[in-house]
Image (cartoon, rainbow, N blue to C red; front, side, top):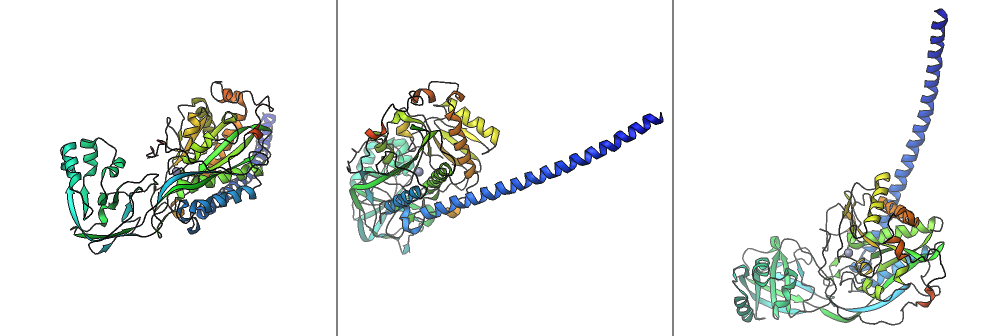
Length: 502
Ligand SMILES: [Zn+2]
């Protein structure tokens, strides 16, 4: 019995000892984990700051909203090219350039943008925006006629009303949405083209500007409801529009060569935005799409800092997206390397706040790749949620998808949702989880390197055309960048009124 008690005491002592040792080990482990966690947090925080600096640069005054006034888009393109070169990215075609020039028509507002209602001076961007297709218009003391076009009963009555409009008055048109929906059966965005030469005011709750490749006869101002005085008497207008039939733009393209030279993982993001509405009002476009360009630059840095990837990585900064996907349309018609050498393409547009996660356009078109992306996210907890969406012609992935390139368009969910307005500023972006989105994308790219990770052979594996095994097949050197020529693409019906991420 005593032996047994002694044995039990000994066992207890040993247990306490072991427990103490384990506890020490655990403490050390915990301390190590804490340090690692702190380190990771610090890295994530500094990476976030890195992104914020890139976005701040792309939205700075010298970029003029990255549009067609004061050559804002050129400044942005030059900056991105400089960053690519600093990171030692290579031209996609050996001996070739990084830029791909092209041109398209665009209506611009480089001069005055003045609107005074009664005696109240309206602030451009905050109180009003001009229809992007409008021409110049100068008038003093125009009497305002108030019309409730929601009461127009049929198209004949509308046609009769249009005949009464003259440039000698300004017209305040109420309930245009009802007229478009119930009588004209058109989208509201198509309405301004129906108006004759003259000045029109349309009240709006949210001012969302665009870029237009067309002009219309009428000068139309969308005025914020809260900005208008109650009694509308007269207005002064002075806006100056300049239509550029051949506005030159450049896609900026670079690569980090991988072990497999002629198969590419591609990341794209458009760098153009709306530019300026008059000589004093720039649309910064922090979320759309300085944030996506910053993430693309972050990915470029990631791939240059790490050992060479398996497949080559290609980065394309597109121009002309806001004018109707002009840059990606041109690139897919004139690719630097054949499109079938793209293993997978991820287009990034609107990446300023992933607090709620991301949405993936084309998820239902490429379900296996989407599953893979989700699996990675579930294992690593990068973002809280990944929402699946079908196909949509709402960003630069569109022409690639049409050309048979496996592709996603990824945008972030969260934040204040400023979009195509003067409030889309760097200071409004949280950048929550955005660095994690980059990790998710690089993990995803690594996973699709292992082709058999995708059970299905219809999309990813087939589109490689076995190039993985035959690096000689397809000679990228044959396809020269069309740097010297500036062809003007025909004014096709590109999806200008894009279905946006609501
Ligand atoms: Zn965009």
